[in-house]
Length: 115
Length: 521
Image (cartoon, rainbow over all chains, first blue to last red; front, side, top):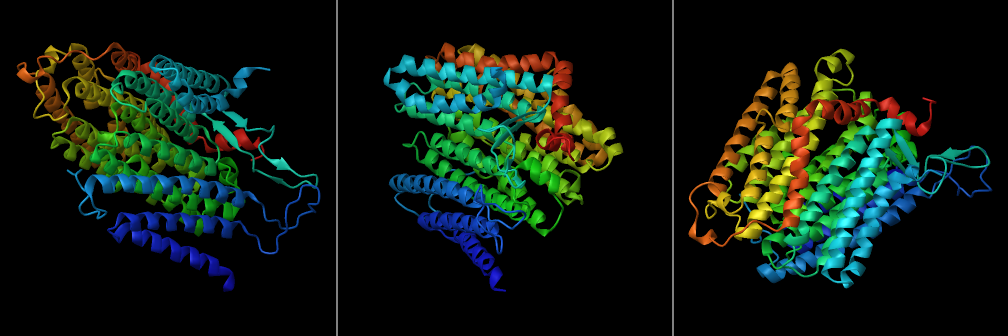
């Protein structure tokens, strides 16, 4: 049961993020929702990468067929975090530009493009 | 050693170098920067065409980054498929050729189109990053790298869509696109996590060999189909397409069309090469077909009522994506049944893949002509435009070719691919072919409207001083025009040399796996 707790946390963070993106009206809150989504994806990668009872795969010391925890998902997560950082920075700077143009952060008022 | 074995890596390295040297080249003034942009895009296109030749002649090319083998083997005999690989089969090679031609045309066009603005060295840096991302998505043989290149392409395109950041609409469009594509990238990452959790691998071929349909795979498939359909602008998730395409500078829109094809490529690579026959039920193929039909019909009906030239064309790209989705969905439907595949499935796939190149070429050309009209006349509003054929004869000529091709008028290339799609979808369910035909008629109607209001009619007083666009913009447009005319004149050659190998490579899942893993299937 406790083994599944990390997945539960991933699910909760994921749905919080989706909720914020879909139903919040403030641009900053939408940006927070996107970062929550990124956090849940990263956490999922880390959790899925762990093998119960696994050891470190050191090149020379690796034994026969023992379970090992490969560092691949950690490397993937680091890459994803860096990408997420770049996206968040750009997202916030676009929000600043939008605020300068429209004078508001409310998505209901920022809709010059339609039809 | 033959330098040609490094072609897959060069196809990524050259535009990447182009991107990061651009600011330096920008220090040397306008001429140096333009020369660099032309040089890099021509080199990229040449590399992509060479790569395509190599793949057609010698079969699938597998390139391992920084190592000899696709896996790492420990002294104890354990081995893991953890190397970074590029895998280029005929379908990927076809896609990179299409994408790089669109990038070349966009680069030529942007040289003068962007002249009035500052920060151009940043523009060309972002432009080449977008090219790198697009080519990377099409060349990689690794699910996680697909995500990385997807993000490179997305981040570069956010910057390019919002390039005119003094226009509120551009920033708004960019923000909308950013929310949509970040969500879809995260969905792809979650799917990658599921694959890693199940199979300890992110290598597409390695995962495909071990794949057994279970709950985790179904969840991953849902995430991938939803996110990539969102990225290529299929109907329930199409709201970003018209905004982003209409607000980006025209040369960039031409490239964005090709980038959306890269998402489409990812969708079909996953469906055909990763899942293949183990998709089991017909739910996924029918979902794709239904999305395609909805995209075709809703896209075109929205397009008919538009008054702004680029927005109208952007809604047409939603409907053209629908054709491709429907055709390849039919191919996916018949994947398990060799008889159905021979009867109609393979024709549908040929039609769909032929439509990819046709769509990228004529849609890119249409966006470039819209940009040319905007450059010369200063407006994109169809209610204000008129009589431009008198002052811009060459642009008008190229617009007419592209419009005839997209409407599927008989001699043109659009007709050939649409005919293949009609034939094959009729065999599955006649209503699909009817929907495609109705869409085609409405497409013709809306382009007759654009042609008539913008280019024909009496000369207007306000446009007396309008002249033809500069030569480099005409050059960019004529690259695409020449490709369209060539595809029109030699449909037989195109089908047998470009399209059929690509379709065969997509169907041949075992070939895709064994190209990486060796014969031990």
